[in-house]
Length: 461
Image (cartoon, rainbow, N blue to C red):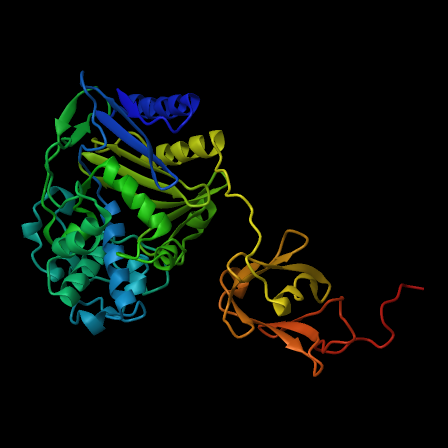
């Protein structure tokens, strides 16, 4: 069974249904539920189930595993934005005595703090959290397996530590802080630490026979900030909108954009695979599309949240089986289906309301040595600098209000761009982090570093 809204074309809705039907059948999932988000709201919900009757809808809870980490990262970024912590702070400054205090908060968020992937035995996902009452029980006798900051090594204990950091700074339980500061403001009423009816049961499906075994559902205790949460496709659809646009009640658009930027040194295999990790978000380049989000799994459950910010399309996929359908691929396919079948319609072009003549005269063609660039004014009163060849260094720049601009991305991120004027007020050249851009290649009238040969341009003869 599936339900949907009428904002997508019938052919698109059928393609989405077909994709999750194949995933549920081939992956042998007891049930699989999905949602697609576009233009800031859910535009499609679909479900497949092995049980006759009404399939799960957008209100049925599934356990979402490590998507919990993204919620924990939001709490940490809130502390940073308030000035309570700095991402460059070593953990020791706020939580002394853990044995992992050398790692910075940013490194823990990006899984580059050198911590182990799992807590000491027994397997924490299938045993009560009461077996690990203290951080020392989670981190073990040797918390660090790798040099701090040198490599991306996914760590569940790392997010347990971040949850403890939130509790220390806020003076309240992690889940209470999450409810007050994130879930309630965003209207995520069906997201919780413990399952609330209606919710799916978790199952293990035998790899060689079509039979099932119920999985235990454990309270993860200290490990909760790494994977405790239950949620629905409806709530995660709203969370996807937040991770795309921001919400000043929780985190600004700039801060969620920071979460989506790569923040960890990746392994060679990860680079070849087109994957990276930000601050609590996984990043992947797939089928020519940049995707951000997070996957999750706990015994009995699989979860995936995938967002294409450029296409303004997101997908949520949840299933109640320990293994089976590869939900990251399903989520990416749902995004691709909508983005390709119904590409985003851009807003109408409109002219600027005003343009500073001193800025307007800077637009057009500039040369860094013999490399040709175009400088354009942008709608937000900033500028962009792009190579005319289509390949090379490019960036958008934010206006500083004093006739200078600061780079926002790529090679020129943080670099200062300014127009250097002659005594008579005319523009001599552009200075970008010491690079001289001139109106003509090696303009002899500009202070080109190293000077310009007085004989000028010539052929070979």
